Length: 285
Image 1 (tube, rainbow, N blue to C red):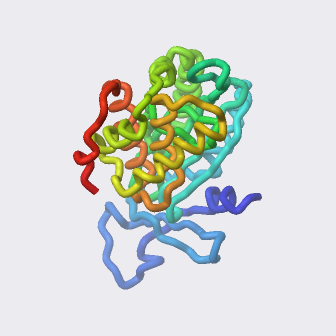
Image 2 (image 1 turned 120 degrees about the vertical axis):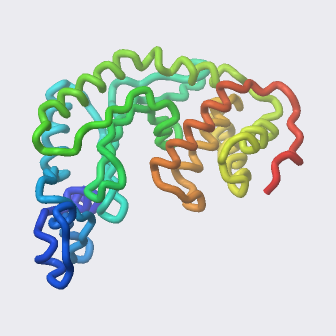
């Protein structure tokens, strides 16, 4: 088992809080706690305080059955697991055999559907199903640029069958409609931008993207255009920003915050065609 998978499926349990903190007083709302057995250092980490009624749903129990059902529905996928401090968990599934192309056909800029499930033991995020796309050309994830479906599901053991049914139904609908979903991507792919560095400045000036990372965006766009013989379009410019959100460690924030910024960037680019020279002095570092 890989290290990421081992950590993602680390054992977790619910115990009485007084067993861990015998000198503290607890109410009915926090008389139990959730503990993760960390495989990285062998320690135990308290990630939440809950009531006795809290139904603990372990990652191993939920995701093992979910992936079994996805395969039973003849869905082929590559899986990536991620966690933050053993509190927040993200399982991403890149769907195989459903490739789509953006821009002029000869450039073969392909994307594939991508599914992400978010949940936490710490109550920091709710249980969510997000659907987006993954861009193969640079493996940047492209996640969240167009979240077409989000299912907020109750985080308990008692409704697992309903959760699985909702997830499977939502995913199938998303896949069936994916060609229509990427219509806006194609709009961006058809817009060739002449003064493209000015376009980068204009997008930065009108969104929350950090100005300190403009140079990295420009460098990435140049690299992808030259490396893959791609025209510089709004699609390539968008992906220059998106790449930084996925790979630039200098850009802080949670995955949820980056998805929100990603959507803001894409919406601005789509809603505001660029056909004039931009005054760079408007971008104040």
